[in-house]
Length: 246
Image (cartoon, rainbow, N blue to C red; front, side):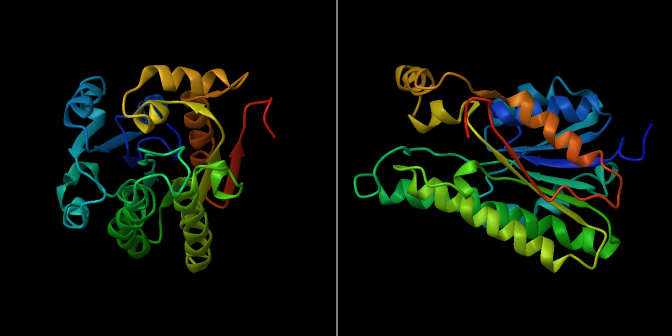
């Protein structure tokens, strides 16, 4: 067993398409995973596949009080938390011109993708700082650094994640804590289906525009690569694109 194996990971958005792939990769690498998701049914189905190596927690990361209680809910045998992977996010109501879309949709996207991510990090990070050990992985998007029309709220949230990650890395520079940002390109997950509120035709039409897309397993494999680096190596930022995109 390597030094990295056996470590405990807290993974948000665990029951979604990306989260399930990340969970599989983490378990295959010998890690234990605290699965955090707001979808109780999907969460329990995922947890049933992981045995004693997983612990499910139903939690909506936009619920501030629930997030504050997160460290207390994690059982003792899953502590300390060695890695936090901030994966939860959505684009419900997105791919709509800003002035036409719902202000509530825009607010909900920001609340989950940025504010929720920051709240979870604030809940987990102090123990890492106290131990001078840990790794924070934030999943943003190529939208964090590229303009995509009709995605104002989503892109703003991911740009916020990018700057938060950069700033956090600077604040922790004198510690042994590593901070990594992943910027995936077009990936086949259920985020597109939820964006269109379950409209499978719109989901198909969206992906049909493109010749190629990443699979969730591609992102999961990249995360494990970052985690598996020696303690003195920090993968600060990784952009992952299908080969026909630029």
